[in-house]
Image (cartoon, rainbow, N blue to C red; front, side):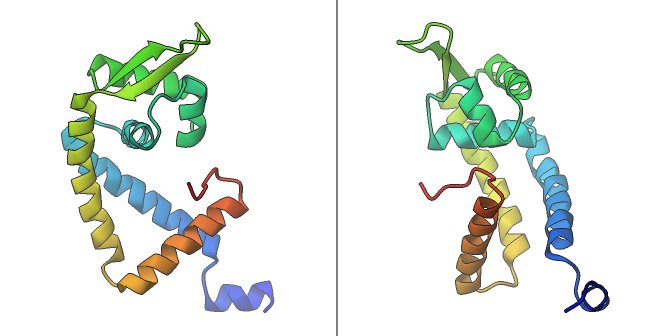
Length: 151
């Protein structure tokens, strides 16, 4: 199929993914707003739940942001006592970050809101298609080196 034929029939996958990303981010902002968390802060807390004790650089890579942005996110989360930072035992300058009980509680609350949003987004897809979509998205992310691993 030529480019002009595709343009007349179906939108590009990259266009649809981009539209979905913008809509999803806007809706995530809305559902997280009552908690006082940004999408970046929620992402950071979620990453820490999966992998406690990460350094600033590791968190930045896993959260797809710069180390400088991660430092700002961690400062805000620390100020709210949602995370605690402790020096690494073998590298004095490296700080390891972990969730506090307050961070876990808030994250659980956010997860319920995000679960509702994801359910709304996926409402037209039966379970088997949801599983295939998840597998396809993981594959696409790996194909572009987006740091998604089957861990």
